[in-house]
Image 1 (cartoon, helix red, strand yellow):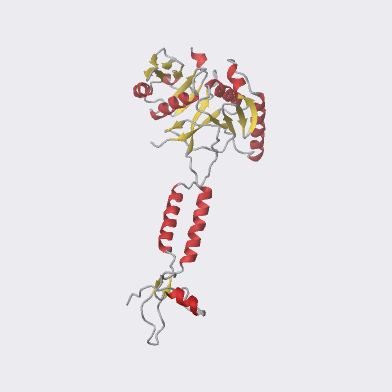
Image 2 (cartoon, helix red, strand yellow; image 1 turned 90 degrees about the vertical axis):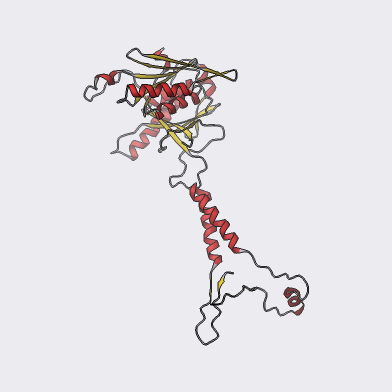
Length: 163
Length: 178
């Protein structure tokens, strides 16, 4: 047991030697360990939010500015990404070949989305339209890149509607 | 103040001579041992600090399921309490109750309604509105899907959720460090 010994106590004075109670301290620490082990979160889970775009849904608010009427769309196709708008713009980002396998070109998507954000700097909404057959992970990755580029207000729509 | 060398506290007054002889040494190896408490306390403090770093006051709203490997994402938001629709390679479940087969939903190209899912979500919505009569319904549902699932299946889940009044979808992901 840990102790503080001042060496006194023989001259009639009250001894000032003290013992530090380590056992209760260890008990407290063990209780803390048990509690923290029970409440520990090993996986950091989070969410990528999106709302579902309902075609033809009318807004009851005042009419939006002219540039907000243009829909910005990111299609996730089996052949690659297509960035487009209802104004008629269309940018194809085809899959690239990496180790004999075709993969989505994320770097190119990042670059194009950054350019789009500069062009539409007041907009933060983007419709993500995945096609059937696309892996869920590829859609989430595209949404993650879009959110990183500044399009925080993501909507989901059926990719077939824009084909 | 003199600092006194720590001495054995235990086994001082031993009435049996042969035990006292043995304990005190007398030429042989001493068997009186001190338990090293200070390194043990150091170890516990390090453990407590490490566990405090992984402590979350809100706990886990979404449990990691062994059959589902979620995708990773960096730009994420916190998960809020909502009904959880889990989609693995075999089944689609709503809060742990099976509502459809993933294979069956993946085969059909049409955007079909998953009726058991709609009914389950509508029941959840009614329950929520009963508990929170004065608050507007957020219509949020958590979709926890495997990373390799065809998005067609997720689309059907979303379509059914929208039909039940859940227009906002939170896709559960593993948060990646930025």
